[in-house]
Image (cartoon, rainbow, N blue to C red; front, side, top):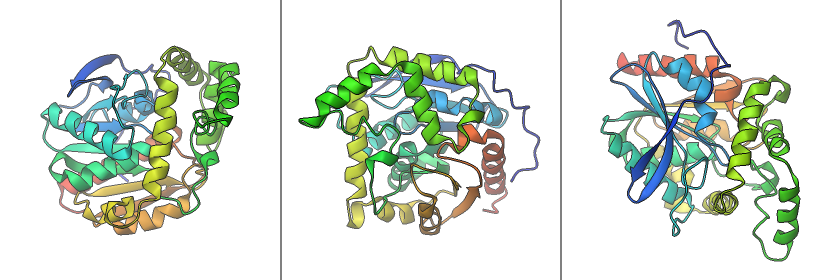
Length: 311
């Protein structure tokens, strides 16, 4: 943990302004966090999430690095290309192109859940792009894959034959605020700690995304993309990718993560050649949102240790 003072936590700040970034034919929606010159942080959201998932952590780290959080294809406000595959590999390729296009040299890469798995793949395959890696409850393979533990369990079924039609009717009957509350109930150890104004922001985003014909299929296809990756064995598995990561890596996991079990944490950290593990009590799946100050201190501690060549 860093002893350097952080900004006072202000959870009333709204999401940072969005803009468009062109990436090999894709127009990604991104949010930039103004910050210190030189160091560049890239924040990668999870399944069903968006760039707004990083507002508080990015603000905590802004004095030490400028930040940029992309909406992955099919999420937030990034419309996917018609032929986008929605596999973890496809997302990793887009992210690599985006990071390379920043022209900032190797970046501090932070990923949560699906974004953690994508960031792991990028760090293993393109080590020259990654200065440090932070994985927050990364979507590592679970021997008991269960759609009920994914961020939107109904969406995993919505586009299946026969049963999908009824599921889509149920989803359509839910209001944006109900959908937003379900996500927080699943992702937070203490859902009541989620600020009401943040729930308003999330519900507004759900309402806007409901008008995008590509949003629901993108979520469903990415869900199955994760499950397919979990079933891969051998050199193409996520477990095989972890030992190839050269970057100093911090793994953060909540003890009450109901989506990706904390039982994955120790194995993940041990496989990473320069990995260290931080397990947070009373914390769920999105530690960067539920414990932004603690996570910021841990991330900054890694950055400082790397600068001193002590990691």
